[in-house]
Length: 114
Length: 117
Image (cartoon, rainbow over all chains, first blue to last red; front, side):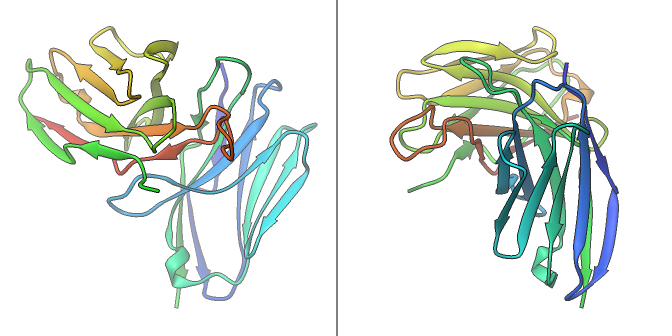
């Protein structure tokens, strides 16, 4: 089955700096890669996702890049703000027909220092 | 549009008991997936339901079961609770290709925090 590794497990940045979180996946058949943000006491919130036919996607201060050959994808947050502090999870999925199963990375605790 | 709702939000049970958790998906969403989140194992897939049928299952023992109703609401049941079942149980729904929906994008609810004593 799919295995997703996520690094780093903790990340502290100064407000205004950029943050980068990296994930690798094992199953070359995976074709959908979402990123979730989870705040304390809440469920994961989708912040951005990318599919295997796209190399990069941006949404304001957030961007995701995908390298299918190397089987890794990364989350980039620019101009970080204290409210970006949370746990971030990457995930991978093979989405075809009736199959729906997200395999998650272990999470990154991001702390943005004011 | 209301998000995914889960009830109850918190639950305390003792070993050997059983528990039923409920999930109401986003209106119009037909697929419901369940995940278990623990500090040690992270987020793990339990099962997925679509049109009242389980169509995908993770690697959990048979004590974990679920079902989906005709209105897409779903329940999961854990029988003979063990201490290790203490976790946050998350439900996620996806639209399955309805107009305006991304078929496999999953939206999570707030979770049910289960504590087994």
